[in-house]
Length: 270
Image 1 (tube, rainbow, N blue to C red):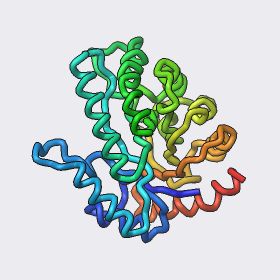
Image 2 (cartoon, rainbow, N blue to C red):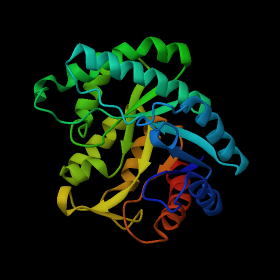
Image 3 (cartoon, rainbow, N blue to C red):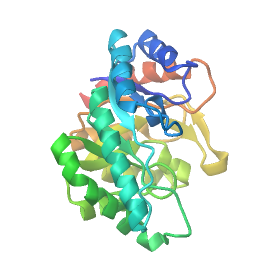
Image 4 (cartoon, rainbow, N blue to C red):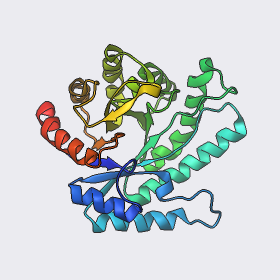
């Protein structure tokens, strides 16, 4: 059982400092952001060389790289934009392999007037289907996150996965994001049941409130039912890393989250 830390809202002014922090706290692995490897504003950037360098930095500290965030936007009906996004995702997947992971945390996309809500699933699935051939070739998995507002609904997530039709596309289950969207605790629990069925990646996260009233909390101090979410993952046979995300402001927030996870997750999963 590995416990990981996402490179987000965490100490460390540089990637090296963040990796030092993760290793010093006792995390086994980290999830990195696309920007950690690829500066897409720099035409001279060599992200492949940077990925090799970053993997060596992590390995030197005894920390694995468990997932890589794509920062993609698949919510498009435009053929040209779709080509650009799919080609970019193929490169992201290759970067993930160079980093030593085959799990890519994948966004759905961002709301736009160009894509009505009744076309969201079609748009997302069309891009994902285009990715399947290179996913199979690389043995890389896309984990569709319930991040933002488009895919913050487990029923939509599973609809899109059904339309995609590949074991190489599953979900990222973020335990707070459904509540952040405004869903009731009861609906969040139902979404845990659904999303866990295809979970490839996980963000253990807690908090209180939704949308503009949301405040991050240390695991166990918020209002979401983390124990139920973990039980759902157990029933579904989840075998991935336990990646922690914390959006509060306490300096020791991540270490306290790790303490909670190490104390509770093994007992619940036993």
